[in-house]
Image 1: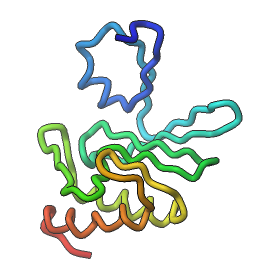
Image 2 (image 1 turned 90 degrees about the horizontal axis):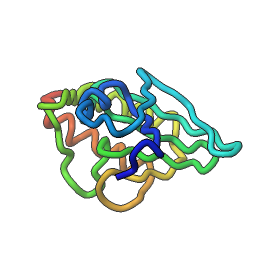
Image 3 (image 1 turned 30 degrees about the vertical axis):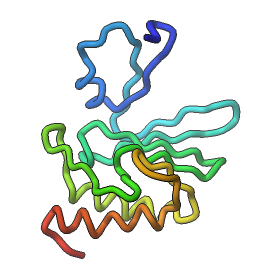
Length: 135
């Protein structure tokens, strides 16, 4: 669809899952990377295995917006993609860290309405039930 006009920036595990598509150019990272749009710094973070092994969270620092992707299902039960490396304990820890570090940020979930970090933190309880843990 995009051909060689676009470079896909993703976690290295995500690229492995897309490795059959040789029509795209890739730039991969392992833990975190930053890109700039004009003067705006954008962070790309890998939470470790969470929803999958190749998740990326995008943080638009200047706008105070987090695009959480499938790490957050607002109004829906989270999908734990075991076949692709899901780990609920890592997922819970990452959400806790995000809630502390970015408390005043708006969150764009992978599914559901745009919300705040507090709503994202409510997923802890569901994940703890699924993981069989409590904090």
